[in-house]
Length: 261
Ligand code: DGL
Image (cartoon, rainbow, N blue to C red; front, side, top):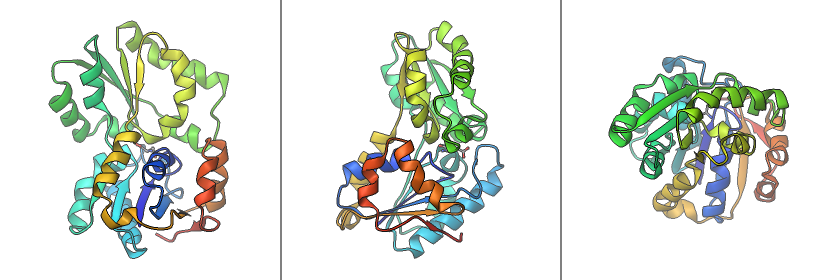
C-alpha cells in the first residue's frame, strides 16, 4: 500500500498521477485539513506533523510514503527518512531542474508557499540546477487556501495572479514552476496568463515515475483508494468532482474517514 499525504487538497494532483501510473496499487491519501495551510507555519510545527503522519501511514500498512507537498518536503523529508529508515520516502520538490534545462531565455520563476520560498532546500536546489540562470522566487500567500475553498474561477483572483506574474513575464521568464501541489489546480487559470510567453512546470508526472521505480510489491493490489482527513473528511471526498478527479471515485473503498493523527 502506498501512503500519500499533504496539508489538504493539493496532493490530490500527485495522487491522480500515481493512480494512473500504478492502476493496481492500493493507495491511502491523507489530508491534514485540521492544519492547512502549512505554508504559513514554522518548520518545527510542520516537522512534527510530518513525523506523526508518516508513522500513522506506516501503522496503516503503507510500505511507501509520498510527501505530496513541497512545503512539508522542504521542512521535513530528511527527518521523516531518518525516522522511517526501512520505508522508501518520495518527496516533492519544485521542478527547478526541468525548468532550467528547458528554458531558452535563461530566466525562470518559482511559485511557492512562504515556507518553501524561504527554505534552504529550495536555495540549494536552485544552486545545484539553475546556478547560471536568473531565478525569481514568488511567494504566493493565500493561493493554497483558495484551492482549499474551491474558489477556482473567481475573476478577481485571475486579476491578482496576472498582476503577480506580470513583472517576471515582462522580464523574460519562460518557465513558471508550480512549486506547491495546490497550484496544479490553478493551472487552467494561470495558463491563459502565461500563454505565448512561458510554460508552467509541474512535477506530478515525475513523482509518479519515481513511485513506479520504488513501488515493488506496493504496485500489486486491488487498485483501492482510501481517503483520510484530520478534519472534515466529507469535504475531501466532495472535492474530487470539483477538482476534475471524478475518475478517482471509482477506486474508493468506502467513504472518506477522519484520521486521528
Ligand atoms: N500543497 C502544499 C505544497 O506543495 C502546501 C500548501 C499549504 O498547505 O500551504 O507546498
